[in-house]
Image 1: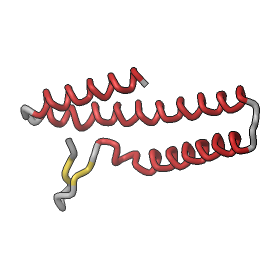
Image 2: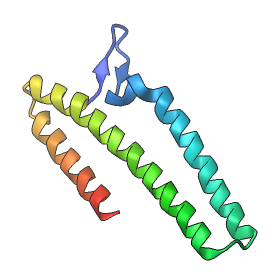
Image 3: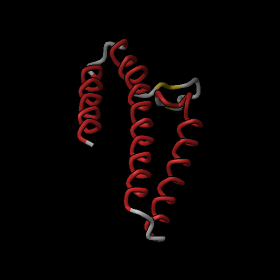
Length: 103
């Protein structure tokens, strides 16, 4: 669920941290380019795997932050509103958690 401002524009739970998330994703993008460069330069396998592990952890941290924002804003707002959507938001969050655990 998103929160509407006075003008009626929808905002998601992460909107307060949007700049931080965007900056983090730009750094992750740079890390991914670095891994690609390491492969092109035929660097040592273990060094590449170490960088992939760091990249994976960085993405997981972003995902957990977004999930926390979703639970704290979107799900809570839907439950507070007493909407049938509250149960749907919880199910949606559970499915997202399952996908994160499998990855």
